Image (cartoon, rainbow, N blue to C red; front, side):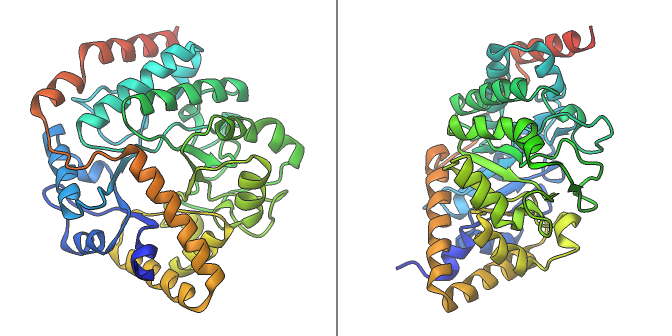
Length: 361
């Protein structure tokens, strides 16, 4: 029987520093049961080096094939750039207004990531570009039109899946109309619930209908849903709205729990225990192994004291396992010929140039 601490660890994807090898504290957590890793620019020097790092992650826990994830949206948020294809922002994909092109972009991004050993891309952004003064979304959004965001976002996600890489729609219930960056502070939206339904929620409702595999939460307070708590720790937002009203059945993943919007207001123990009960299945802890250890300990303690919490912990772990199994590539080892052929290929570069040119016309 799997012990509770191992189940708790399986609800966390973590980040670490360095490019040459997985640090010992993070390696120990992977062996303990951590769901996987997220890589950032700080971890990426070259395609061969990234592929070797992902292969090492596989070898550290071969029986589970850990998740290897990254933010590779295009535009400002593209952790691995040249010699991979450097994509214009998603706004350029929106300007093309063609589902077939959006799918091709997803296939191309996914193909390059798969060649490097990744199994999950935190894309597409399904936020609606509804506020020109937004400091964090802007051209990361596909469009100001929620229907365009819906159709093109789902097509891009399906392209990722066709390349063997999981997608993650973000940031629920919508980060497009905020005036603050949740990396730095806690945004609040005072919209009427009707506006939320008519605009921000349209793409996420479509994602639920399309059975996309994962949705990421926003560290944003939506006063019409829950005036006290950001969506990441709000049962009204995640269980009531996302699961209940929208009928989403996939994996709910938090945005990075070390972002100031939540980290300045909640201890990591509170984020993971309250977040789990709110409806989060998987938590991103992107920097500090010590916080991952504290999160695992807090989830374990709570489960030891409450059968209801244990049941919820196990439910979340089963969703994580199902997601990981769907996109798993156990035993990944770098293939230099494949990397050279796929990453930054002529066809991908031409598609990126066409999108960039069309969006500026």
